[in-house]
Length: 308
Image (cartoon, rainbow, N blue to C red; front, side, top):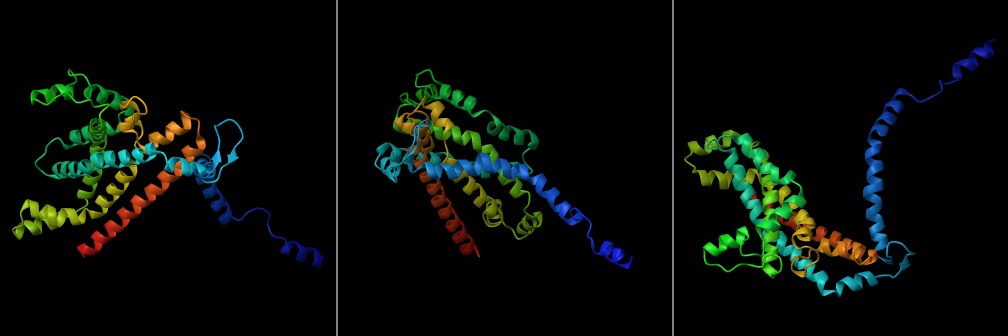
């Protein structure tokens, strides 16, 4: 009898403890994200690195070719032209855009502007509009015909019609204008959120000390807004290196004047059925984004140190 009771006392209850059940439930709740990310994010990314060293048309067997895909794209003048176009369009489209977005955000944050909610919605509308619709509308605006709206406006000032889709700088300016219009409102809303987090006491103290508006902007707004500016510059830089739909629709295909690096990648994969060189281009773009992000990182750190 004594031996039987001793055996019952040492047997532990079966199943998981409450702590482990709670942890397991948490992992199950977040598992869909990791599952989807593994299938649609991590696997394609790793597969692209693997495919960059293979020759594959998408159907047959893969053949290992070493670095021949990289040699091909690095000796292709159109690849370097696409990088040049990407950087130029990115600078034209994002540089003035960030300045305009900051000015719009400051105007929205001031007490002078009325109906702020209406303006905020109006600024954000271009960002949620279909990129295909935007590209088609801008194709009409920047029509090569003399009756096109932009050419007709230029003719009022005695300027000859511009071949917006086929000229070297005409295509770049038209695409950059499209990017400017689409993203300026989005970035101004981000700047506005940063402006509203700056304490009003700083401006009141500056006014008491006799600081003018431009001095308040230069010595209070810009330094306090620096983390937001760095974030917007980071995202705008990465976004400008991934321009695709705008030149594809506006340029009506793969024109050299508007060929960007993502468009070059897409052409290799789905027009030439050369998935190896397309993946090599993707890896090169990945490294290019890392280079530009690193430059931005060191530049922002240098500004931080110089401001202290």
